[in-house]
Image (cartoon, rainbow, N blue to C red):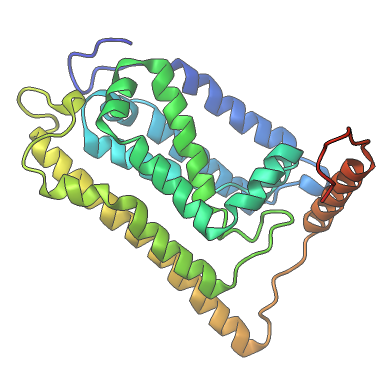
Amino acid sequence: MTALDHPFDWHLDLFWTLAIPALFAAYLVTTRSGDRRASPRQRVFFTLGVAALLVAFMWPLGDLAAHWSLLALVLQRLLLMLAGTPRPILVRLTRPAAVDAVLRVIVKPVPAVGIVTVVAVGTLTTGVVSLAANSDAARVAIQIVVLLSGFVLWAPVLTELPGAQPLSAFGRGGYLIVQSIVPSFLSVIWIFARRSLYASYDHRGTVLGMSPVLDQQLAGFLAKLCTIAVLWTVAFTLMTRSQVAAESGDDAEPLMWSDVQREIERAERREQRERRPHAPGDPPAG
């Protein structure tokens, strides 16, 4: 780890400097032709998502989050967890059998809330935050876990996931409201704590004009208010659009070819398992 003597000392994060352009290049190659061809609108949204990753991981926010400010860390986490993933990428990434098996679990609200809560709380415990502040490798691993948890957060809401049985609009709205409340209970502790809880951010003097306790309290307000604002807005929009669609008689979700293709792939995997010879003592298929 590079020692930083000032909050705005410049530091190059080599991993993300290489990984983010590689991700962008892979997207352009993957979605340039065929049935995975991305529309101009999809390209714009993906570019905005890449820009959000650059803001989250690179200087100055990345350095502030790693070594100086819980407020910056929370802002970084919000950028990672509240970002979406375009359909062409989802179709490709979720095609392997193992990933598809996980997908069929995380699209259910209860497992999704549990996973997001464990990641959101676990990665913000004092020990994990201290580990991330003192190890570049650990910090990158934790950031990747948080980024993946953002996908889990949105999975029950997305209608773009191939082969997933979507919830009703009111079911998705209710799920988002629950998801905005359960994982963010740490923010209440931060708001009312009278001392800094994180040694990694307990610097002498002030950082960005804030004492460690004020930084912690503002992080609590940011985590609570931003999560509620974003997820409740999406929930309200989903339910409003559903009501309007129902009144106009056009409330069916469109069936995509990738949905049909995913179900065919699942059926083929089931057939292969059934054809596979069983050793004595193996449980029956199905």
